[in-house]
Length: 253
Image 1 (cartoon, rainbow, N blue to C red):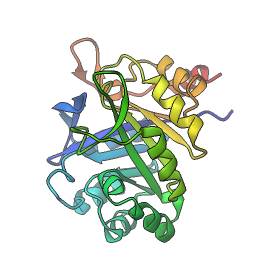
Image 2 (tube, rainbow, N blue to C red):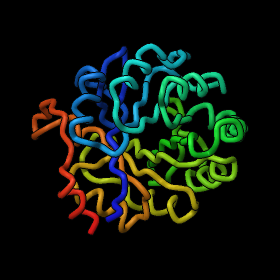
Image 3 (cartoon, rainbow, N blue to C red):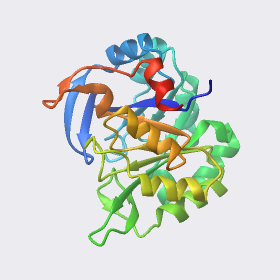
């Protein structure tokens, strides 16, 4: 039976793994290599790794670390963070990543999406869209790791990204990141209905039923989560976990 992809999203910072709440207060959760080994054992569908400070620090992707991660991973990998040139994408793909996620560079230089897609194929190019609500509940794209609300409608931006050749969208709700209260289903639905390329929902998942709603009610093609896979219990003890295949099959029946 076909079932949608369920993708852990791991955040890299200073060579370690962290988890944020609403993109703030990163908490150290462990070593990325160890986490990848555990996710190997749990046969996860894919992994997304995002270096959350690379762009802010105007720093290139840490290729040595990415190469080590790839050498241990059995699943397809996507990387984002500090990607600003075609050479960056080439380097990341050359060490073994299947996909590269672009965020800030896409926002401020949209033609980069077209160039990346033409050079490496749309299947390798994921555009990450961080979205916040303002005081009046209006959605806008957020740049600079969610710290800067832009006058950019996320639905229109998603359509622009698709026209420029992105193969997939990674839509993350800044307001729900790390909260465990469920995805922003309205946001995901608006974007999924506006484009034809796959949409990965992220931000807010706290239980398997949240995956079900994002797929069945909002039209996401895949779901991603962070806290749900690295914390356990109300005190958020660090524990790498992942639902069993049977749980996931039941979730998507």
